[in-house]
Image (cartoon, rainbow, N blue to C red; front, side, top):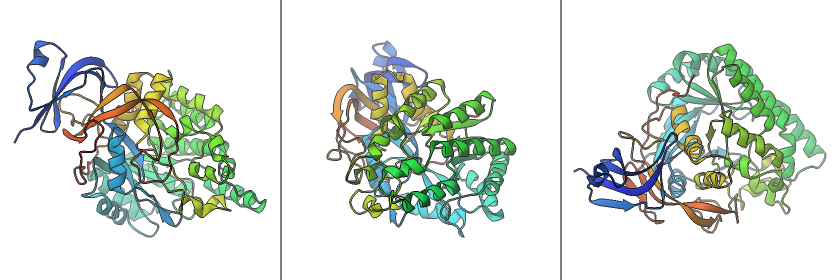
Length: 467
């Protein structure tokens, strides 16, 4: 049975256009757009009409970097796929790409099957997977080809976390060479983990145990060095490279240099690096533990270069790296030893609003907001134009956004399953009002009307952003 919805009178914003238009949704997809008030728009009929007058009509956000239920440091991320995707919907995100994990000694298939089991039937919005490759060997390389056929087309490696996820340069090169052949995209956590472990050991020996030392030992130069090394390894392999959670001026410079050379090298940053800083890590009474993540928060002066990189397209994507751990009982594991604090911040619900605040503040334009939060992540990870835009044939993942509403971010009002907000007390302008996922209303005028199991696994094609 056919279902139709019309969204009337809003300003439709995509990465390329802004137009006052009515949107016709039919059977879960965008059927047509027509300029508001024209005969074509008046001809749209549906059993359900959403009045978007005075509001923005934008594509649902695509968060290409989340970690629901991730085991880490003897505990697990506090958001399940059910709670995390519900919170994402509240924040105007309608697709997440999460990370399945290969454990050392196990196959990619085992890791992927484990993550499918966690997510299936529980998600409020659509989801896809990247694959964390922790154990590069001949069988793993063959499996990469098979996963690409199943729509898992990107593979994350770590230059950090020796003994856990770490890959050495030889393993990285082999995986990059394979991706050059099969069309996969290597994602890199670029920090020199071997050197960082030396600095951690030395800091703890000096009695430097507070959370702020987490940022001091994970030096910006060691992020830049690893970024440079990853770029050159990818160049040797003839493979594209996507560097995750870029936080430092020096790392942006490495990406900009590579892009000026014409290399297919891309960079992602996250809201925490744009809005938070080492001032937060230094908060007293162990409060700084709330802000421990890797790469770490940097001194505030790095923020200007990150914003510049987003404007000049030296950085292409803003994702959250959503990996929440409660302060009580989880972050507290690191009292007396910062190296034991679980690494990660909550943010999947805050990204679209924080980036709209960046529009209000003049850092980026409205269309750039949609580009870095919706369209480019969809293109980068093979979801476009199914996701990331509002156009005929696209999934009807649509957000009605009130650009004038004011809100104060707080753990008392957010929907993430974590006992603190990284942005507690921050006042922002703009708020999600209604969210459609494949035409189904999951947030209706600030009420949750979705359900677990609506979201489905979404296979991806290979990167659509290569030059």
